[in-house]
Length: 65
Image (cartoon, rainbow, N blue to C red; front, side, top):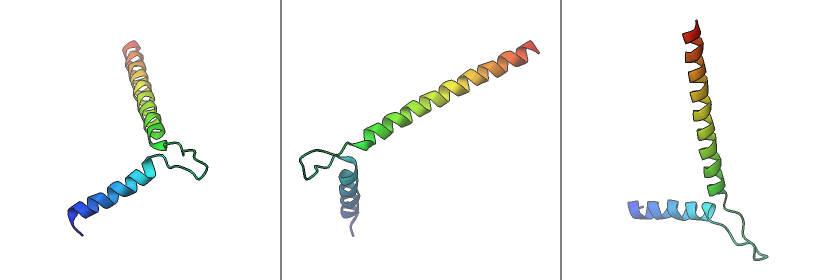
Protein backbone atom coordinates (compact mmCIF):
# COMPACT_ATOMS: atom_id res chain seq x y z
CA UNK A 1 0.00 0.00 0.00
CA UNK A 2 1.39 3.38 -0.90
CA UNK A 3 1.51 6.28 1.51
CA UNK A 4 -1.20 8.14 -0.42
CA UNK A 5 -3.53 5.12 -0.31
CA UNK A 6 -2.95 4.76 3.44
CA UNK A 7 -3.78 8.39 4.07
CA UNK A 8 -6.91 8.15 1.91
CA UNK A 9 -8.00 5.05 3.85
CA UNK A 10 -7.74 6.87 7.19
CA UNK A 11 -9.37 10.02 5.78
CA UNK A 12 -12.35 8.02 4.53
CA UNK A 13 -12.66 6.24 7.88
CA UNK A 14 -12.57 9.56 9.77
CA UNK A 15 -15.10 11.14 7.41
CA UNK A 16 -17.51 8.26 7.91
CA UNK A 17 -17.24 8.61 11.69
CA UNK A 18 -17.17 12.36 12.16
CA UNK A 19 -19.54 13.69 9.50
CA UNK A 20 -23.29 13.37 9.99
CA UNK A 21 -24.82 10.29 8.42
CA UNK A 22 -28.21 10.36 6.69
CA UNK A 23 -30.68 7.90 8.18
CA UNK A 24 -33.21 5.87 6.21
CA UNK A 25 -35.98 8.30 7.24
CA UNK A 26 -34.05 11.29 5.83
CA UNK A 27 -32.89 12.67 9.17
CA UNK A 28 -29.25 13.07 10.13
CA UNK A 29 -27.28 11.70 13.05
CA UNK A 30 -25.83 14.52 15.11
CA UNK A 31 -22.15 15.17 14.60
CA UNK A 32 -20.61 14.30 17.98
CA UNK A 33 -17.10 15.54 17.24
CA UNK A 34 -17.83 19.29 17.76
CA UNK A 35 -19.78 18.43 20.93
CA UNK A 36 -16.85 16.46 22.29
CA UNK A 37 -14.43 19.20 21.29
CA UNK A 38 -16.52 21.82 23.11
CA UNK A 39 -16.72 19.64 26.24
CA UNK A 40 -12.94 19.20 26.19
CA UNK A 41 -12.42 22.95 25.85
CA UNK A 42 -14.74 23.64 28.79
CA UNK A 43 -13.05 20.99 30.92
CA UNK A 44 -9.59 22.41 30.18
CA UNK A 45 -10.78 25.93 31.03
CA UNK A 46 -12.32 24.73 34.30
CA UNK A 47 -9.13 22.85 35.21
CA UNK A 48 -6.96 25.93 34.57
CA UNK A 49 -9.28 28.17 36.59
CA UNK A 50 -9.39 25.70 39.47
CA UNK A 51 -5.61 25.29 39.53
CA UNK A 52 -5.08 29.04 39.37
CA UNK A 53 -7.54 29.63 42.22
CA UNK A 54 -5.98 27.04 44.51
CA UNK A 55 -2.43 28.14 43.66
CA UNK A 56 -3.28 31.71 44.69
CA UNK A 57 -5.04 30.45 47.82
CA UNK A 58 -2.01 28.42 48.80
CA UNK A 59 0.31 31.40 48.29
CA UNK A 60 -1.99 33.63 50.36
CA UNK A 61 -2.06 31.02 53.13
CA UNK A 62 1.74 30.80 53.24
CA UNK A 63 1.99 34.60 53.24
CA UNK A 64 -0.17 34.75 56.37
CA UNK A 65 1.94 32.17 58.22
